[in-house]
Length: 188
Image (cartoon, rainbow, N blue to C red):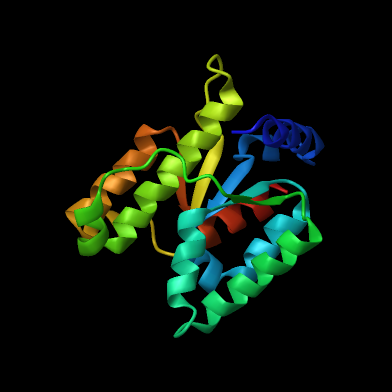
């Protein structure tokens, strides 16, 4: 990660408005394509709260791009992100660098949703490694927000089950966006 991005992320972390109760929640939120398409209003509230830094990996933007022709939520998500990036919202960041690539071309053809989740884990791992400087525990730093039920995801396919396990193995949480929002409102 370039030095200027590390500095800006460090400054953002210092500016996060977190009461003690909310400090138990991850500072980095990474929504998937379904969360952006289905729950844009909630993401707007999370972004506007100043409590979290929302990271949009390249794979999510690619997913929105694929869906935009048939999904109005994807088009709304794209417009929202373009507007926020143009305004320079400090709490929403696009991860431009693709990070380390999983060589899963066959998986991309067979189970695109599992492939996208692996790519998100890869992007998040790059983020946590760049922030830890190798000496801090990064568990709990990142929550991947999904529009799907987290209980149902592993049952979709063996590839998706492995991808969900990769999230946990990387020290990240995978939460349904509605559950996360409810928890945040209860705490705050």
